[in-house]
Image (cartoon, rainbow, N blue to C red):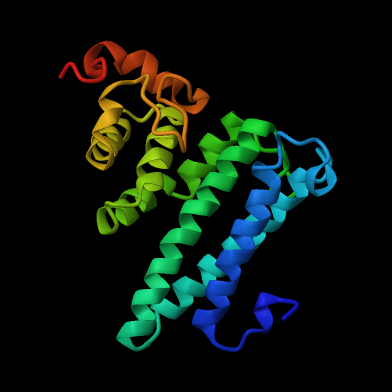
Length: 208
């Protein structure tokens, strides 16, 4: 199958789209330590754009499906895929802004422009909704805290930090990293939160 859009079953189409998002995201993000991988630095922004476009289209399809009458099993799988696609879509936008890459719309993303984008699309509200429904999805809490910090949103930042500690109590220590993401102190996108709340919330690992 050359194009996931050719898949007739909507649920299978979402599954195919999700795998395409992961593959393209990986080419763009995880290749950055090897200059020759997947076309090199000039091509990595294009992989991000492709991942972003597929994720956006698939999320729209999931929204359309959930607004219609579908059987419970398909609804459950659609909700699961909608959440996973959203997690990756948010992370793609974040990484584009950090690297100064163009988005799928051809406009260069910056940390400043991403703040406007996240606010205009109510991204923090949507992440909260997804995290409340799926509290075990660690990346939602991480993304939420980072975006809340980028947007300097106190209430959201404090809420997402609380949820992140529920996922992994190790984050009581701002210098703790589980390995799959940087520590709060080391993540540039969490600088505002780490600076403002370190004295109030940080505890050395194992001391509280």
